[in-house]
Length: 588
Image (tube, rainbow, N blue to C red):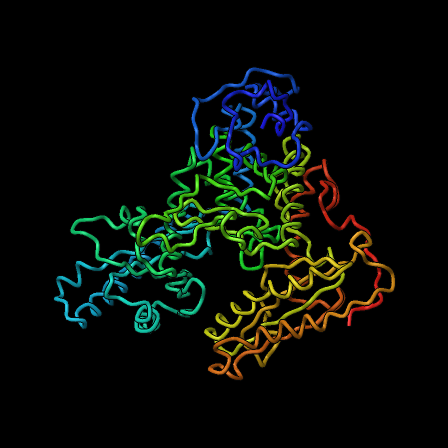
């Protein structure tokens, strides 16, 4: 570890001796970062760059290693954090008090609907009304809502925990049907066959993703549901789908328990989520990182720097993950396996030593709740390259902010996807009804990784998936619902491209279409959906895509022009556009 920090082996403090899966996992020496050595030595720098004794917090330990630094923020760092949060509130505001009150009212209404339905099902199965009432359970929230980082327009991830006499089939049929007939419900799409079954609904204008888990046995008299869910014992003999749904809540709860300062964690996470969305790297299904992964990454940095202010944590976030050795996992706590516990030994726990598939994961970020899972199993070599480039760019941008040569908006300025590339694959998902659109677009999106994995193996070409789904804005009168999706293609000499080279991608397209045609519900919705796929150049981009990017880029440019320190999109480095494109002969 001393070598990883650029120190001699004899100078490493005893507190820095850590496991192989902690900070020692950095794969490049950090000697070029002199501030790392200052942190370890308990030193800081004043505004003139002079070393000064740092104010240190009490010794503590969160997670699997001791912290890298116990420094507390200076007045300068506190002021920088205030500026960061003011900028964030303008660009990515938190939900208002009125908005939160409305969300709570909607959740209460939904819980009443669930409770009434459960009582009816219990009575139908021969239970007394009193007994059926006692067996009902309340809804639990998870995701961004549970973590306290909800923003206007964000959906609410909820978990319905049913007693043993309530089946998943009944939940996705009779309950979903009841929900559809509520006056306040404008959308209700059950997707029971998904890897994690879900009902997507909109109630009183609030989007809700509703999961279902079935208890193996009723709770004991007087037992608190939330307390019971936190214990591993509740998973004993539970089916896999229920375990996955249950762990959505358990993971979010554990994250809040494992960070030293929940408020600093939330402020930092809000900034990182804003940055990831603007930079086009927020999507688990397309092979980037989803919301829970970003939360886990931020939480680990909070553990390593327990007293840092959010602006400092953002800096360390980018630096740590730019330099992380991704052959090692990011973890908040030790992995626990219960191979000798009856009723739990059948659950698959992430273990690259025992499971060959786990050894193939390229950027493992492990969930803390049992059974531990890798939240990034969809990441490919292509999306890893993009993510690491963005970590590096983010760190360079933050350093400019700290030097007062840019504002915080520069860190999360939108990635100019359509200006950055010249060639694209253009997909349009079209449907006649909301239900068909939700199901078919989800199916296509979940299979896009198959196409991108094939394309990234093409010599001379790199690809860049865009996770945004662009509204068609009524451009196709025959199809009232739909979205556009894009994958960029670029050709570089250092990747094997040469002038006059021709790329035949038809075999990849045909294979992808064959996969899409395996949709289990295609016959049930025959004639109600369509997928279009074509290769286009930048000049052929549809207006709905180009206009959407122009609005964001122009807005950010006008704001950033107030600063004189940086000019041009490439001033802070890390942008792939600096590479020289090769003009190819064509793409059949």
